[in-house]
Length: 423
Image 1 (cartoon, helix red, strand yellow):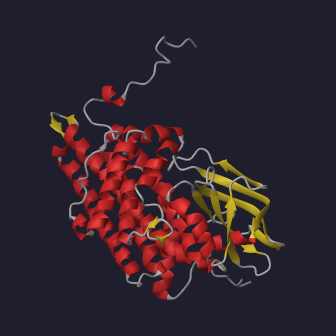
Image 2 (cartoon, helix red, strand yellow; image 1 turned 135 degrees about the vertical axis):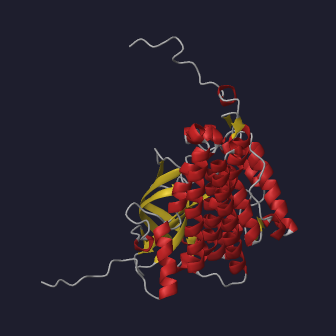
Image 3 (cartoon, helix red, strand yellow; image 1 turned 90 degrees about the horizontal axis):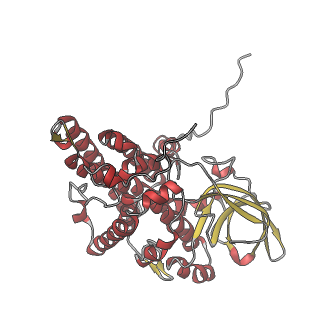
């Protein structure tokens, strides 16, 4: 078949092809803080929010669609991220910022407001890998690793999930065998964000002597270690998820995390990270609303802006109400954590409910943008896809409801009850 002469012409710039509305590369102002949540923040927390928002709108918004489409990470912006001084979040000392839990949460939300992939990159590096070293590592490990991680001169990943064990992570089968001077790790990990380029890999494996889960710090390019990029994702495409394969990887005793002696020890980390994950969909929903709010005022049909139509206003207000409730649940989680009252059930209910509302908000936003609701140029389509992995990781919606269900009823229902045959 002979193609037309213009078949291979580059696509029109979206601002030329569709001049009636502004694409997300010029990010809309924040219009989603309807109940003035910002007034609840301390001045230093507001300062964190403002500098993260400015960086994301200026540095990431213009390039995020390109990198999302290519499924590549914009490594050139890591120094810009480092300058924000949010890596390490709530960790005090060792060059870390020592933010309040609320300050760290709003930083996560502001990153996700523009791009959820970048917020996931931060979450893995800071709220999982760095926090594991801070809470479970030796003093020598903290001194050795945390300063460069805080400056983002080195990047870390956190490897718990395996091909056969996702929700059932405590049954993982990667092994750690004690040898003279260290440990030998064998096994496979999957879905590990940042792993393809991480300098340090925090790996969880089963101690073959105790049969308990232990933690280890593995360096990139360690003999026997290979990491390959997972392809064909439809969400969080900028995140570089990898398959990790370990064949007799030696880890010296100095890199065994002394504070991880059972699976329960991971809960110290997951308690904080689950709060941070809950704030990702809050930020993502804020960005969707902000984009729709501007778009409906700019886009005209039937001789009037879409914002003038009742059905558009109804959907927009439903989105806005969702966001106010999500923010307040997230805020309460922060306060419960600060007071030492937050339970696993609290964190799980917050994460599961907030992601459910974010899913609804993304669907409404997609409807409001019509055909442009399936173009990443206008943010909402990208966010619509990005909420799906967030709904699933750090405990699926269903698993998190069961965590809360166990707490309020006293009955664990994760496994089917064994049925006796009547025959």
